Picture 1 (cartoon, one colour):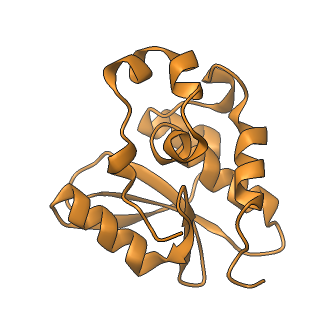
Picture 2: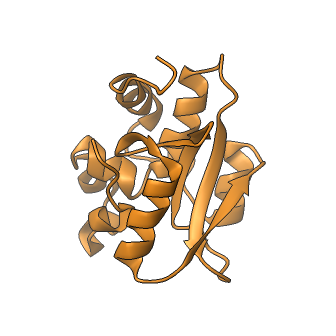
Length: 144
């Protein structure tokens, strides 16, 4: 699947306010907007034999990140599956209409969530980790 901009799947006001409604979205929408960070950490967990990093993007010069994904050897994994990272960055920058900067995440999931005001797995309507691991396994990694 070709890289798609995360912003194309942004949650509606009702999806932002009701965790059950957000949970019931299709997997791609759920992991594009609202649980992308969960998917990135799940990718690392599923592929422990590889040195996968977690990375995020934000508008250049701004503080909050808006999309989180996993990276391995120039490849990025997010809701669109595995794509060249340059392609993922380009489609997101085009969609947002502004330059983006890449931010390497060096902390664990709990610290990331606290620093960036993201939900921990226990704060979702249901545990998103099994759903995320299953989603990761749908896509052949670039080293396969």
